[in-house]
Image (cartoon, rainbow, N blue to C red; front, side, top):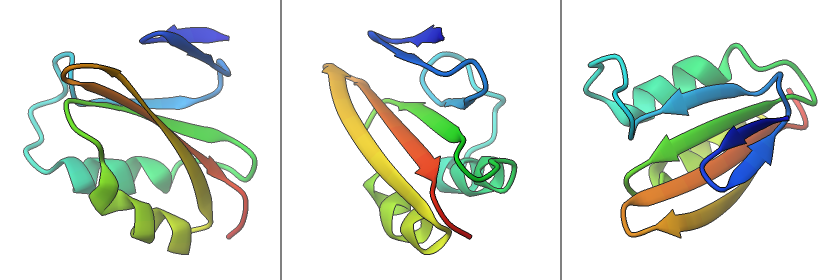
Length: 86
């Protein structure tokens, strides 16, 4: 398990950190969708963001993901997407 914020996720989880540095890519939704393509069935994508990534929920559901979101601080949200289907 690896710590992410106040939670722990499987070591195999792909992390998209839009809060602590990032890679300069301006479109958070695009970063989430691009990372999701790399997630195998049964594995996780964890998004760390300054706001709830609600714009991604419907698209991720259509791509076969379930999610859980936790508001862990004034400007920090953790969302774990788990691929459960194709």
